[in-house]
Image (cartoon, rainbow, N blue to C red; front, side, top):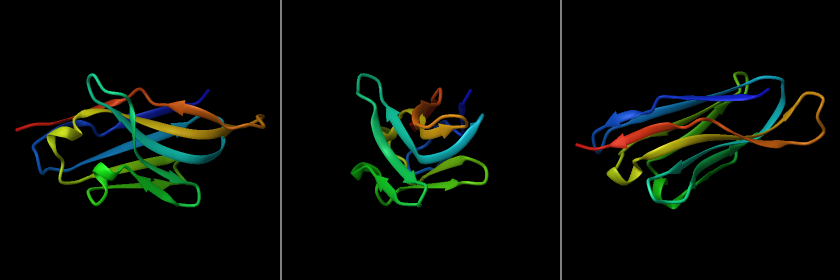
Length: 121
């Protein structure tokens, strides 16, 4: 069984910074893509940033230049460094991974439980 466990959320003032972490555990053979999504109240879940196993990254326009995604393949962990936070960044942030478990020939999509990020003065 695979688990994605997020940490690092919290309350921060506008202009502040937070670092989210997500560790994948279980019988993992390979992880092709890790990503962060977010969902604000009353809105659809949206992609924030993603990173492939080849270290290619992709960002939502709203976070470009402020957020940075990275991964540590030795720890099956993805990070999201968030700087210059704005009130509109307030949301539940979800970790996502497309991975293949041992004894499987296909990759599947997995989600973490989410961590709240609140930006307010």
